[in-house]
Image 1 (cartoon, helix red, strand yellow):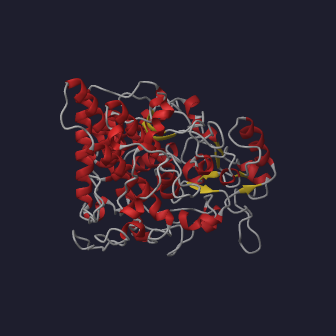
Image 2 (tube, helix red, strand yellow):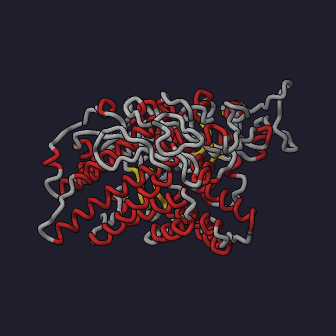
Length: 557
């Protein structure tokens, strides 16, 4: 059976379990089979495991843009983050400014809950159907491998849910509200566990998964295009990210190192190739190509400048000037961004010879919104250089700081998306090393991540300057890969979006202060925490949407 057919078997699971009540689960499967047939052998059970991978890239809730993992990247982290704005589309202001965090009936709030609990529910069904005894050690090893993969998917899903629907670990040292911890396929109402208990389950799942991966002696195929499958390296990568969220610095260091030991940083040619196909650096990916397309629902339709969809062509992604300004001009990764030169801004009539952004008589900058350009030297350069390289459609709108990191692989908007790269593991370790005061290790790690693109890069900074260097390089390297908002939340940082008149490149409607503004502090916007959606509380009377600041077990009921 070929790879694509194996991936598609997610639809074979007869019920798409989530945390919610039975009526909420009645999503018709694309095909069906009996549970007995699905789990009659290791081979068919592996098809079910592969189906978990398929859940990461499929259409959800009948809404364009809801595509599983890519939705979380876009709607939860990158659009509400500080590095990406959509060209002149003010209609997404409330998403971009995190104004829906307390709207328990908003689909942008419940789609991630729905998605991850579907993965958890299907993983639980697999775990419940693993045989209790085995005729041979070889058969036991095969089922150990099945169980290890299912546990890894479950741990990853709970890690992501905790970042979205729970407060920072540091807010109450893990004693704030965690999640509804489903570890079987029952649909009875359950209260939320604490955040500490949530991470206890994540760690327990990963510890068991790692033990089982080792005892099974099995691994995913070595082909680079099989990186959508979970293995021991993936479990270490999930552990790295979870430990970072928990401020568990030593575990973050240990698992970051183990996760990337079999991977190396990609070179410039691979970095500029479009981020649509796994390479030597990718540890885990969301798989998608034209054999199983989701068309205009896809990640690429919203995060690429080369997709045929209007959400991409009309409103392509722009990288914030604040993200590229700290990067050395010799860095070869800058080639995927259309960064305006001083001369181009002057010739376009939006900057004077002294470098000041020009304004009209009312004090409004002459730049159109977030940077739309329809003619002039910059426009002509982008049309000439970027369209010819296949980085944009000839009809894609042009804007200052146009981002072309993701290039469509095939079809309308198909392409794989990295979940974990070796670079993230380096930055995770660097952050943990910094927190422990190991500055020499931080400098060495930043050089490891940067030298492939700046041959002469050398880090000599310390203290706050070293931290700022780490933050700047992480934001730039991982741009548009689902980290921005999560990182800022974890750090307890403020959202700072500078407009053109303030030295940045943000449209005024994406910035601003106040309750509904785009610039806010770590305690604002419900402490950067989404409420539990109404589609959960309707069927689970053990929880309420809004967390009490003094939450304790049982206070939701």
